[in-house]
Length: 628
Ligand SMILES: Nc1ncnc2c1ncn2[C@@H]1O[C@H](COP(=O)(O)OP(=O)(O)O)[C@@H](O)[C@H]1O
Ligand SMILES: [Mg+2]
Image (cartoon, rainbow, N blue to C red; front, side, top):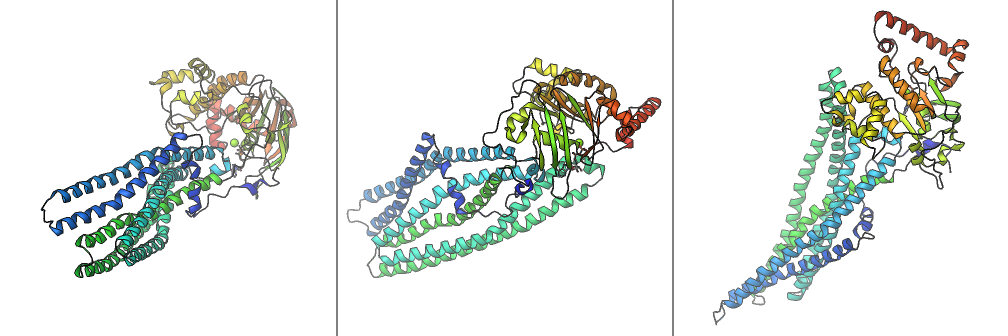
């Protein structure tokens, strides 16, 4: 069950050039005929009836027209205008019926169509949330949301066109050919058939060829969007480096490719239209010559001559659409295929059958890392055999230089990735044998870089516990030392934090993150440099709060400032993915190794800071790179 090498499961990024295939249409069937939705099924039936009636009315229109012409041409002896007038009235009535049933069909069908695209969009969204961190880090969000947007539009198009344009056109063609055969002779039917055959072959072949321009347009459009979004998100960085021109050039490169493909697409469309008009006009000319010949030899009435023309002109309308329909269908299928390709990306991390549930609340749990090896990419191992145990209710600290793998340890425990070798156990159970949902419900993480939702502070804190009361939220904010700050804001808890929380300072964001984790009230707590962006005074205040939250909870602290973890039950010193020292603060100091050296370096900074009167953190950050 457990794959030997998790890299074998790296999801293929959704096929680069997915082709819209007709099999994709069939994947829509369940949405057209939805289970447990008799109302929607009834709609499909009614819409089909309306479609049929519309087509019968449509082919009846030219017949009435030719009758009227004949009546008028013969100048009946009784000179009564009543008969042709009645025919004309009927003609108008049938035209109204044809249009009316057509619109009715669309109106009835709209509900089915919209429900299908909503269902598929939601399922894709849910699927995306189930995909691994690896997938999301590799993908760009702008591109993803574009794919969903276009995919849902594609579904609507495909449903509308496939069911209510292609099928009705075929019906109309058959009816027309049948009537021509019946009223005239088999040659008219054959010519019509041949003309339509040529027309379709030409249209399909040509459209298939030109759809590649559309595909390029899609790709470059995606690319342009992704670049634009990424560039705008990095607004600050762009300004720091004065790289506006560079960004604009990058964006314009995609736009230029889009421009080129669009022009080709347009020109090829015009060529297609010319070809189509030529085919139909030639057929029309031949048939009218035949009819004119008939009229000249009195074997055919003028009305019949008109009828031939009207039928072909009328058939030309849906046929003309057919080129567009085929093109849009192809396009819709390509868009859908891209979305379905996303749906087919396997979840890298899955619940195994019979996975157990770790209760979210309860007695403190024990965490054990057993010889954990891990690499993000096969060519570089990040954790090289890490083993440690956090006894239930204890606090373990992990320290070490930036890049040594500290955050990776917390990602292993949270199961963002599976270990390459070894195991992570909670209360003796391998976390791969637990459901992801229950595992993650039991763990609270205050991450190193907090990203907030573009909503109010209130919303962002409440995120820790959906349905939390105002009192609970304010209490959590108080414990995280941010309540006073919030109440001083003009809009208080309703203050919007901006995209990704950028309107708050690093320290404020961290305190929001701490507040929402306090609200979540988890059994296991991971603090990943949770207070690194705070000044010493605030850090000490929150430190007290965090200690009280951590009390009686199994806690893993990844520390930036060593003075905050002197009380840990055990300190692990990590370097290059290996634990090089471990023990209590005092034991490690007396060991006089890596830890003692780090401690001395920080103490020195603290002393300097005191003399100069600045925040030691600022000093430290100016000496060593801020931890990452
Ligand atoms: N998603 C990723 N893909 C590839 N390499 C990664 C990824 N995340 C982190 N790394 C690398 O793994 C190493 C350890 O990262 P991390 O655990 O975040 O270090 P830290 O100890 O600073 O928290 C770093 O060298 C980092 O570049
Ligand atoms: Mg880190």
